[in-house]
Structures are given as C-alpha cells and as structure tokens.
Image 1 (cartoon, rainbow, N blue to C red):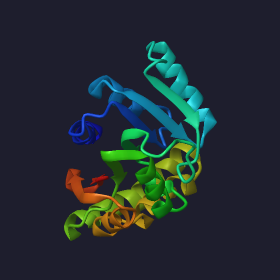
Image 2 (image 1 turned 30 degrees about the vertical axis):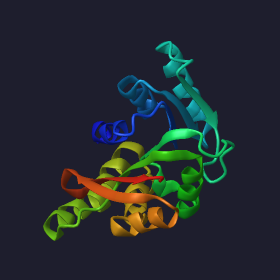
Image 3 (image 1 turned 135 degrees about the vertical axis):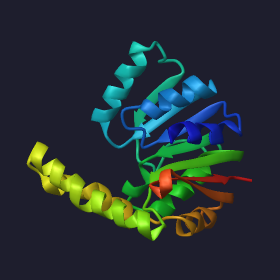
Length: 199
C-alpha cells in the first residue's frame, strides 16, 4: 500500500515533503529513500517521535529527515512550504478532517500533491460480510485473549467505519481547494489512497 502511495507522490517529483501523523517515522524514511527528498514529519505524540528520531539517527539521516511535535489543524509552517504532503493511516484520527485538509492545502505549493493512505471498508457486499466478521468479531476476540482488553481492539474497525470514504472523502478534499481528486482502492477495498492537486 505504501509503495503504491509513494509512486503517486513521485509523479510531482517533490524536493521537500511533509508527512503528517508520521508516528514512528517508517513512512517518512521510506519516502526519503525512494523519492530522494527532504522530509519533515509531524505528530501529536512526542513519544512516537522519539522512536522516529532514533530510527533516523541510526541510519544517519538526521540532515534529510526531521521531526517535530505539531497539530495538523494548526501548523507553524509558512504558506506553500512543501511540494507534497502525505498522511498514512492518520486521517481517521483527525478531530476535524476538513480543517486538517484546509491546513495541508495552505502549506502545499501550487502544483503539489496531497496523498492520503487510509484504511477503508470494502464496497462489495460479499467481501464486506467477511470483512465485518473479521474486523468486528475475530480481531477483538483474539485481542482480548492476548491482552485482556477487547475494547482496544474494537477501536480500529469502529474508527475505519466512521471515517468518510470514497466520494464523501473526495468531496471534503475538493471543498478544501484540491483539484483532480481521485481515489484508488486496494486489496478488495480494505485500503484507499486519495490524491488531490493544488493548482
């Protein structure tokens, strides 16, 4: 999934990229390695960023990849600071998705891309039946056996079901100013890549 997303971002040949909700930095590192651009990663969790910084330091990439704690709804970056912005599996945790998109639109240069990689629910009814069985019952059951906390494993499928998907997500992107918005569904619809361009 990340490989497909990287290829889409590569079409705008970014020199400077922002990875929002970067977590422990895995996608930021992959983006740098494959696109040969500088990457700034932001996340609300300083604990996760500490892990990300250690990974980057171990690889000697501190000059090319940097991290800072920040809220995607109110970023400190100047207008038109980045050639591309990526979000991998973080949009469903945004408090206000529309405000997040508006802020990301602000910091992207004209001609730049927003690429969002997010989990989604399959559209096919037959596949959806087995997906719901797995996500809503098997994952929480196995999770409760291994951790004793079933509720923690219910959050993932519930958050996926709650996030706007497909055309609804594209409409939020368009309302934030993005053009040529597209969705690419992967693995029978359990993951979706959304892209939009700032003209």
